[in-house]
Image 1 (cartoon, rainbow, N blue to C red):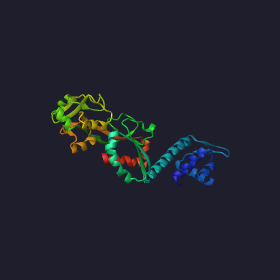
Image 2 (cartoon, rainbow, N blue to C red; image 1 turned 90 degrees about the vertical axis):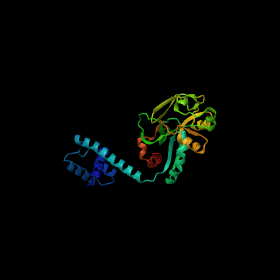
Image 3 (cartoon, rainbow, N blue to C red; image 1 turned 135 degrees about the vertical axis):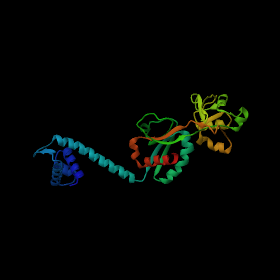
Image 4 (spheres, rainbow, N blue to C red; image 1 turned 60 degrees about the vertical axis):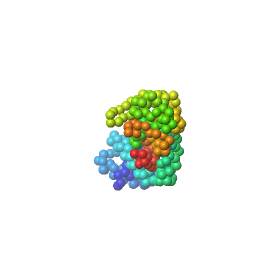
Length: 292
């Protein structure tokens, strides 16, 4: 007899209180249910149930074996479900959170390819620089930039977020072009907040420079900082994905292109139990493919 079938009958007999009830639950005859139990006891060389005409009692071994059977059957069912999910085409709605600049300038350009590849998936994309609670806000995944705190989330690394220092030709004509990193301290520097303006880090073959910078304008939005730089309000340190098109078009000038700027790690994060979903797995794998 099939071992798993016999385990199912045994578990049903324990939970239903009798072999006849287990037979009904498993859609087999009472005789067959008794055969399954005897087959288990013969295989194990141990009695599992003490039965009388009125009631049944678990033996000490039978109680332990019942718990083990429950766990084995749970794992088998879970594995079957996971295999079934792997065979299913990704479908349904994905709710994704991403930082504003990355979402606008990089992710939006890649989404057409993803949606074309998986026509049964729809995406609800929330752009925000706020770190959200995935479970509380019902998000399947989020893209995080910067060091990750310890958490129960699963994190897959993406390519580090590259930064670039730029200024408009008009600003440089008016204030001069900084020749060495130390010159930045004498310029108007733009950033998200006074805290992020405290110092900028650059490095080259001669070493690392940590330059104290300051400025009269802080804006809590990357696109607004780009516009401020385009209008000659100062020098900006922002993601390369936001500035590269302006540099190529001559609207902005990249400063210190031979220096390395500190890179910020980037990850896609999700709750561990969500990854079994084919739609989420397809999206995470797509991000790793595009931004690894």
